Amino acid sequence: MELFLMVACLALFGMAVTCLAFSAATRHEETRQPEVAEQKPAPAPVRTRFFADEVVAPAALQYQVPLEVLLLQIESHVRLEQAAAESFLESPASASLHSRTTSPLVH
Image (cartoon, rainbow, N blue to C red):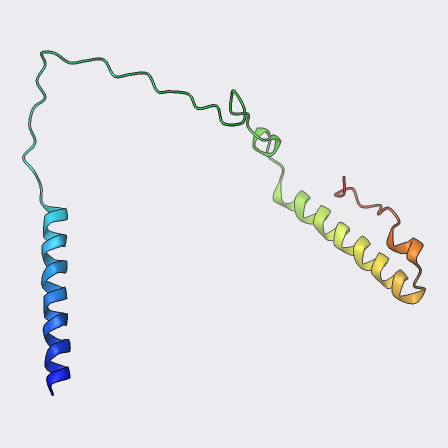
C-alpha cells in the first residue's frame, strides 16, 4: 500500500511539473513595439566554407527525369543481374564473377 501511495504521489508531482512547464511554454507575452531610434543594421550572414566555397546543386536536381524512365532502367538492370547470376549458377567460374556487366546503371 505504501508503494502504491508513493507511486501515486510521484505521478501527481510529475503531472504538476509537466503542467507548469506547458503553461510557461505557451504563455503569450505582451507584444512590444520595437523602438525606431537606434536600430543597428543586421550583420551580414557569415558564409561557411567547410569543404567548398559555394554550394553546387547536384546533377540530379538540375533536371527532372520521369519516374517511369527510372523504373524501366532499374528493371532492366535487375533483369541483367539476374541473368548473370543464373549463368554463373549454370557454369560457375571465377572469370564470370569478375566480368563487366552490360547494365547502363553501372559506372
